[in-house]
Length: 317
Image 1: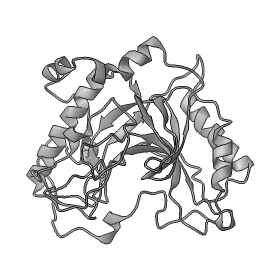
Image 2: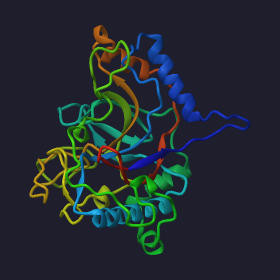
Image 3: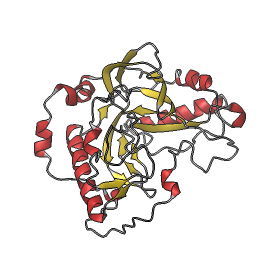
Image 4: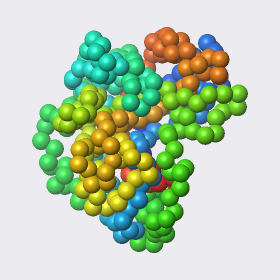
């Protein structure tokens, strides 16, 4: 799932508030020895939902892409200007480790030690406006059936899903390779120059929700989207995955693809920081958190763009 970070511009300014935010974050880290493992390029915001996905056929892939992007079209109708991400619930950091619970709130930035472990939450420097509060609570507090009944077509281009308006797919069920199972680019195989150790730390926005399964223990960090509409639980369209993790947005017991039961780790990466080992080109965890605590930022909110499959077979939002 590709998501767009909503960018705002001051009058006469060609540089957005989000770009200023990213630059401030990088410069702050760099000034205290952030290290060569830190990502100095803008990260394309996305949500990785599965890896190494194999569809039953080109037809099934086309049907899956249409169904999921129709759901995204509903979300775009609900949130025409995007929505703050968050929840009225509570969570401990790191989640599930017995820490003191705090209110999640809306529009926060989070530090992830890896995709499954959120270490610290950072609050924006202002409260929600009345308009932002309306959209942030729209899905949970209101009847949204009108958006579903009125959205009957997809009014955006989702050609990133390889749907060019016809069924001309080059489907190869034997084309899967080990690279499709690679981790998120927080560690990758091509490390930056002078970076001597991979690492999976990053700043981002969690999109995980509490599961009804007692085998999963994620907290609800957002109440704006239900990713169940994007998951093919019964294997109607998808025959298998390149890893045994299945759906990264939460896998359930007795799933059709035989994946391990795992908690929902949906998130949007914004800024990768890499390893926390200073001797290997990284930055210590304590220093990362100290720097982030001194950065002012406004309420962060996003707008989903489309569902697609990338060149490595990963289904993304």
